[in-house]
Length: 112
Image (cartoon, rainbow, N blue to C red; front, top):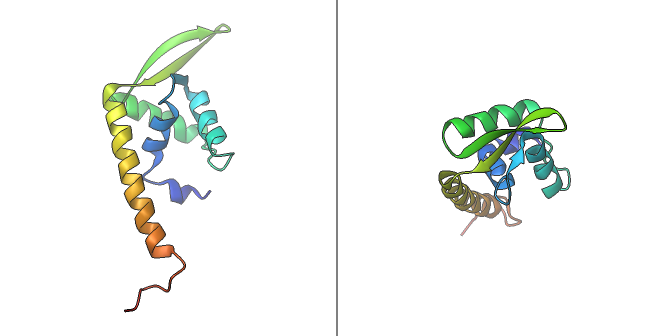
């Protein structure tokens, strides 16, 4: 999938990847890749700055842990993050149905 197609939807994708359980940054990336059968495989240079930004604005909360002798930050949705995810989903449904209507199989623009 082209990166341009994801612009404006990154936050919603990351929030959705954290909906079921807390995850560390790389696991968020893997969850998106797995959920989309590999069609969305974001670079770590995109995922980590976005996670930090979502944490700064209070949509996710992070905590440090040590696993196998290595420190890693695990993220989970906050109540505000769950509300934001709901809004992202509603916005996506509206966007998707509008684009589907415009790009459907009928001639465009529609003639009367």
